[in-house]
Image (cartoon, rainbow, N blue to C red; front, side, top):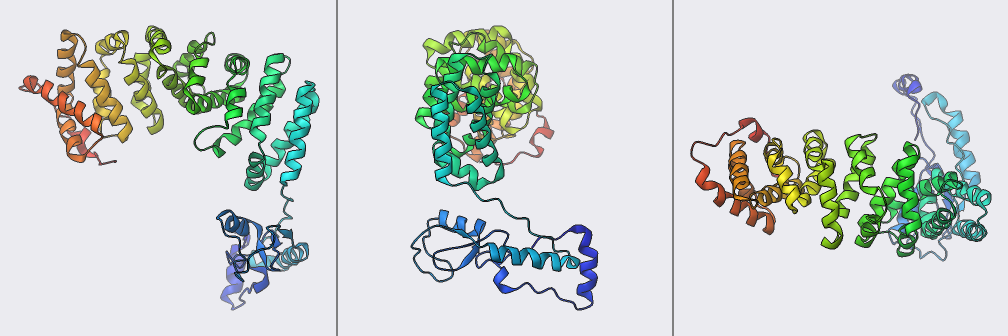
Length: 439
C-alpha cells in the first residue's frame, strides 16, 4: 500500500477512533499479500501483481502459485477492470493516506524489440544516421521505463546489434556521427551489468575492433564528461572480458597518456576507477606487449601517483591502485622508483590487514618484490618496513590465514627481516587498534 506522509497524521487519528481501513481481499496479490499495482491474469484464471508473478516465473516455477496448476501459457493478461477498481478504491480512501495507484505502462514485448532491432540493422547497412538515432532513442526509452523492459531488450540481443552499429558509424566518421555514437554507447552502458562474466562474443568483436577502439579513445580525449564516462566503462568491460582487447587497446595512439591524465587530474570517481582497471589489464598483457607499457607509465610518474591515490581512496579504488603498483614492481624501473619513494613502505604496510584480502595480497607482494631488488635497496626497504610495523602485521597475517602464495612471501619476508629487527622496530599501536580478520 502506498501512503502519503502528509496524510499520516489524519490516518492515525481515524485509526485511533476505531475506523479501521480494510483492504478488499481480491485487491491483494496472492504472492506478496500487498495491494496490487499492476494486476495481470494467468491462464489459470488467477490474478497476481505483475512484479510478483514475474519473479515467480523467472525463478523456474511454471505452475500457478495459488492452485499449483501447470500453466498452459506464460502469457500475463493485464486485468484493467481490477486495476481501475483498485485505483478508485485508493481515491475513495485517500483520507486514510492511501495514494492512487498510477496506471502502469504496458511492458515491451520480445516481438517489439526484435522488430526495432531488425529495423536498426537495416538502417546501419545504409548508414542512415537519423533513422538509427530514432530507433536508439526508442530502445533507451524502453530501458528507462522498467527493469523488466531492460531484461527483455538485452535478452533479444540488443547489445550485439548496437555494437555492430557503433563499429559501422565509427568506421564511417567519429566527428560526423558523434551524437549517434554517444547515444549507442549510453544504451550499451546500462546493458553491461546483465553480462556477469563477459560480454557477448559478437559484441566484443564489434566493440573491440580497431575502429571502435579508436573512437572510444577519441571520446576520452574530445567529448564531454558523460561520453568520457561511458567510453571508459566500455573499455573496462572489454579489457576484463578478454586479454586480447587489452592488447589491441595498447596499440592505440596516446591511450596511455589519456589514462594517466584521468588518474593525475581526476574528474569523476567512476572514470578514475575504470582507468585504473584498464591500466591493470594493459600491464597484465604478455611481456612482449606489457614491458614497454610498464616503462612508459613509470616514466610518466605513475608509481608515485598510485601511492598518493592509495592513501585516501575507498576500498575498490585502493585495491586496484595497489594491484597496478604491484605489477609495476615487476620491472626494474618500477622497483627503482618505488625504492626511492618515501611513501612506499608506510603506505604498503598500512594497507596490510586494513582494506581487504586482495589489498593485503598486493601489498605483501610489492614489498616482497622490492626486497629482491639490488642489495642496497633491499636493506633500505626491509629496514623501513620494520620501522613502520610490518613484522607484527605479517605474523598476524600468518595467524589469520592467507593464500598460499601470499603465505610464502610473508614467511620469506619475516626471515629476511629477522637480522635487522634489533633496535629498529617501531610499532604504530594505532595501526593495530582496528585490525580485523577480513577474510
